[in-house]
Image 1 (cartoon, rainbow, N blue to C red):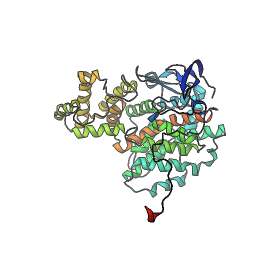
Image 2 (image 1 turned 90 degrees about the vertical axis):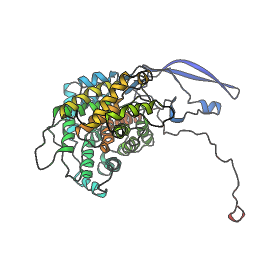
Image 3 (image 1 turned 135 degrees about the vertical axis):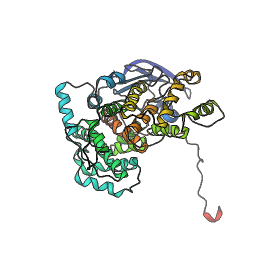
Image 4 (image 1 turned 135 degrees about the horizontal axis):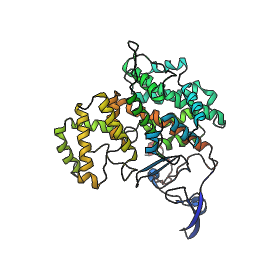
Length: 434
């Protein structure tokens, strides 16, 4: 990875009566960055930043977010342009290679992904080790980590060819594993991938086809799922991506790193947000209950939480939500779900949030989790599969970030510091004298 950091100026920090010169860098866009790498060595102090809210852990050329302006760029391309004009496989190529493919490059890449979708026959035995009522995300964490036991010919992280093969394998096999996790938990036989189908259509078939009848892919649903994956493909240094990078910094194989990302994504504060939004709608139950719910939301003394509105990063409108909103309404219309009580609640809540002064002034707009939860439910996915679908889409982002980290000569093994506030040094006391 060729660094694109440009020195802009320097800052002088006085600490312990010593002046330290710290360089200031500017990126392609976004705020300037203060380089504190020599702070501990020269000043004997380090920074305190819980959650790394003001700390850049890596230099990256993949994704850029401007939360104040509601901007999300993949390799410089606005997310709305990619969602409207591209497809998920093309976006995968873009994230991995940095540029959009030409026709020949796209054909070669698509073929590589398509022909890696099958799993080793013995791999299916892993699923039998889980209880039938196991959460699909538990199955995903265990099985993805096990890929290293089957594809050890692509675990040498120092070999660029093996890194590429591992990347293709994970993007290709993730929908197959996810489809099996779904089928296993509902007691239906596994459905193998078909090479003539595109990525999203193949996944829908592996989830919903049954041996008793032919399965015809609905193009509206396939396109909605494809765009859903584009919107979730990467999101800069979020918790799961940082987990993948941290695991990878130790030299762990790529399959183990992606498994760690899936485990992190499972958290309700991260990938489980759309499931939480749907649970909120279920708790409201009926449109007639919305006024009372809104009253409770506005009451500072009430602990009721509004899920699926606002965003920790986007202080303005979530750019992905605009795209997801259109998809949501298209899917609802296609499947005839307008009369679903929960979806009626969702649409009424959306209308209030977009017009009520309380929500507008606080910029509590519906976010992508609000719309994606409704959309996935209308497509036939249970809430337990929502985070699994997120993981399938985010795999390419994790892989691209992992590969970028491996190729970055300045990257070191992750080792955050701490402020120790425990007991000072003390001597051991024998048990009979305590």
